[in-house]
Amino acid sequence: MGEQILNVNYEEKPCYDIIFRNDFDGLASRVRELGFLKRKICIITDSNVRPLYLDCVRDLLKSVGKVFAFEIEAGEDNKNLNTVRNIYGYLIENHFDRHDLLVALGGGVVGDITGFAASTYLRGIAFIQIPTTLLAQTDSSIGGKTGVDFEGYKNMVGAFYMPALVYINTEVLKTLDDRQFAAGFAEVMKYGLIMDQEFYFWLIENMYEIQEKDNEVLTHMIYRSCECKKEVVEKDPKEQNERALLNFGHTIGHAIEKASNFKLLHGECVALGSIAAAYISMKKGLIETGTCYEIRDMFVPFNLPISVENIEPNQIAELIKSDKKVDNGTIRFILLHDIGKAFIDTTVTKEEICEAVKEILYMENGD
Image 1: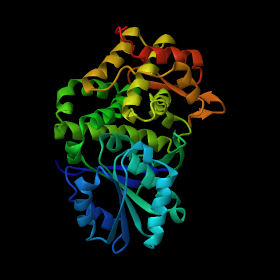
Image 2: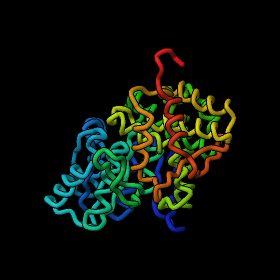
Image 3: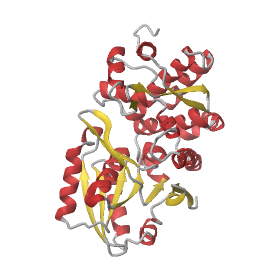
Image 4: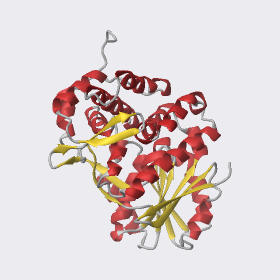
């Protein structure tokens, strides 16, 4: 595969490129072109990614500047202000200034933490994203949302801060475990559900190639996902309106994630939240019953959960009240008129949320 490029604009001006390759060979030249020759570069990665890709990326960037590396423990539990504080300390100790560069090498947690640290260190230092999970490549690395969890509440502290570059090496997905790959696929499916019915059916038609991680099919899937997110983000970079559509499945999903003490992966919770949102759409008469259950069943062959144990509907409803998407006490829910046609709804009640959560509760008798 040759190099492909998407340019993301911010306030109608070119902002950053998303590079698609199946290697890291173009990374150093890209960073050099951004103006970081002979600057300090700090690669922030985690304990899962470090043994796989840190040495390769560090060796490539040594031709650009002086390279440092900072490792955090992998996992959502470490996506907090204490980790950011440790990054600040490391940057200060090594005399990083606002003309230097941070590199996020990892999945969504690493990308969100690095972006938030970059947005606040010295009131702003440049950073680039090198996403290594499917979820990060198709969603979290794009659009400038950065942040950390606070007291168990998802992404409660953060900032909109655009990267200088997103460099996607699709080949790294071959080292991603099956559960993480499936979790990332939930975000991919979301794009089909909210805005591109044709893409939704393409995903189903290419189910086996996706599961086998066929590089050509994966590259198209990732590229189209990024196109979808780019389209929405450019229209509404700070989520004043249309960008909220990207939260389909996330309102109930985030609450399930917290209720499970983050034992469930983000993408798994998004799948469950998407099924619940489709159910609410059906109960409101917006989509057909068959469409609702087709959406549910389509998560199964991609190894995503369609039911969950040990959660209380009332607890989920209460957790949603503290979600960052609540506006003046009103929950902005994303519902469907059809596959590929999402909209913002502010009429969903606590009773409807509880009924939807009951729909995804695992029953031992299979009902």
